[in-house]
Length: 464
Image 1 (cartoon, helix red, strand yellow):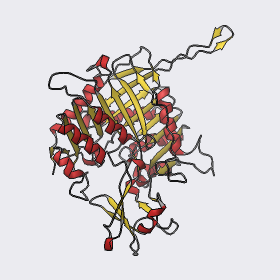
Image 2 (cartoon, rainbow, N blue to C red):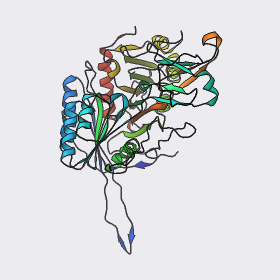
Image 3 (cartoon, rainbow, N blue to C red):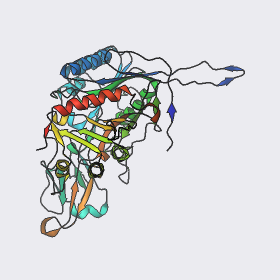
Image 4 (cartoon, one colour):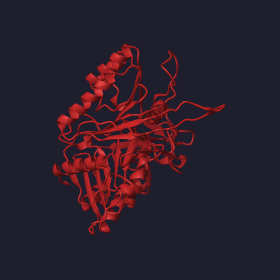
């Protein structure tokens, strides 16, 4: 599909030590007799947040809290538990008590957390999603899925035709022979907050103890970008306006499936490319409706000189294949994963062994390591440079396929169904900064993400 391009005005905001991108002027003209309608400017100012250490991370969080405390009309937050503590909850509760429209979307696993419980006690509406799922994607699997069990070491659910009771999923009201996806396999990974009419904060990871990893994210002042995130939020929140007593929510998460187990979430925009009057451009994508893993895999194959991948874990076999292809053909490939976050392999040629062969290293931030992919940051040996890009996701690099049939591996030679965490059941977002041929090496935000990656690499150890 052809991308839509929106160009920006000339104003650029300045901030000490932070890159600012100015986007957006859209002229809306309609004819009223001979007189044009008033000129309207939709300006976008984007401030990238790259915390270099723990102190920077604390400062970033303080600025985010300050903006929430100053919100007048609304706070719409789709957040993970790693950014929702008591102080954040207090800022939201204060806004709620002062009459602002405050709503929260969260992952089902976070229900009962201290921050979320405080919001519930203050009658702030919270919508939880992406919890346990019992479904039947293929009726032919019903005979081999009567018993499901979770292997914590490999993070895999195995379903077979065993007759013993299953500890996973409540099957009393479920479909006969349905497959069980436990709560931990389905994730609401967003960390964005919409404030009033123009401000959006978005983070790739949280503020929990991450060693010296630091947080990645941005703050934007933009009605255009706000609309994109608002469409995403409204789908998960399930209400069109402030809560009405007795009104049943119609929430749509990654785990909300149609009659034929298809994804119901809709796309938020038509692949808008946000340009600026300084080099570099920005795109934003949402999962699962745009399947972000394909975007990453395609970017790796398009690389012309180098690929750097940083993520808590990498389980997608097609992404690993793309990295192996590049490494085997002379490209510089660097991979860093989170310590203790990569599951054990089911088979000898699983993701762990393939990462080891790629020379992957581990970082102590573990699960709290953000996901960053840098494309063509390094020049070719001949010295030629290519347009660079930096891709950031709100979640790890999981498999695309949520399950597979394993023939003859079960008890007595029966078949089994293997179920995995998958990007098909993750609500998340991807943002990409990239250059064109005309401005190679000039996008300063990509420089800072590259410097962050270099610092991360200094704290890594050999793959265990």
